Image (cartoon, rainbow, N blue to C red; front, side, top):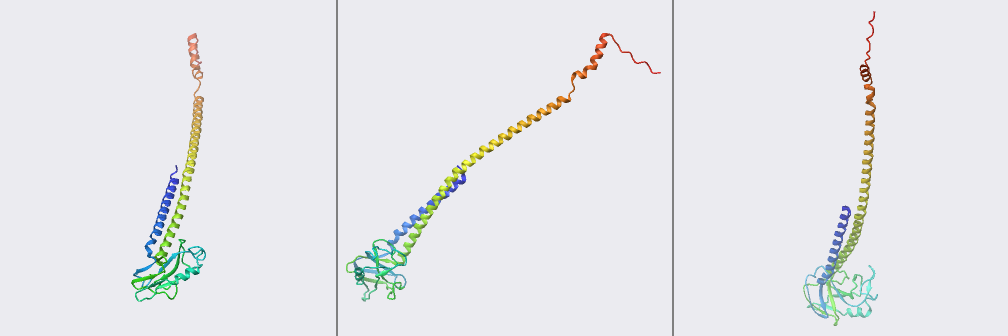
Length: 266
């Protein structure tokens, strides 16, 4: 298999593992939301510390809004409690030792984004006045709830919203990372096999070209050798032509014939 394709596939696997880690982190974020819970009960004492300046607490109870859900259905659109629930929560109180009430009912809100069967019904310790001008901080101390026996939960608003956003961000990032990792992995596998086939065909093509070059080179050398041999054969004189005069003299000697020298010139 091609090394480039394998490298890309390994990168895809690493990205998938990172996405899985982000999924786990997102789940841990949602699991840690319980740490932001400050109170659960149907009435009684509640101890508060650190909410005199800054921060706020959200009060929830089981139920649905008038839209039939326990969360807003569109960002920026307010949801309202039904008349019975609104009248009920208006009688809730959270008082200190002096009898001063710190609970502010909210029959209308736009910050409940979690579909969990619980609805926002009020706020306490709203020193930042996020829910109206009546908000005020809660000095450290012990307070007493009166909810007419209705089960409520109290959450640290800042920690709750931060945890939800971080959890959603981690889950979204993990999902995108896994999708990208799978795509990269598939591309790597395809390239690994595709590039391997190309390399193999190129290998056979190169071998064929080498064989052809070798064959043509050998053929050319044979033709050159034949040409050299032919030239040598043309340069060497025939043996019969060289030995002819000597053979004639020998024959005359054997037959007793002698050649007379030419007469002297006068």
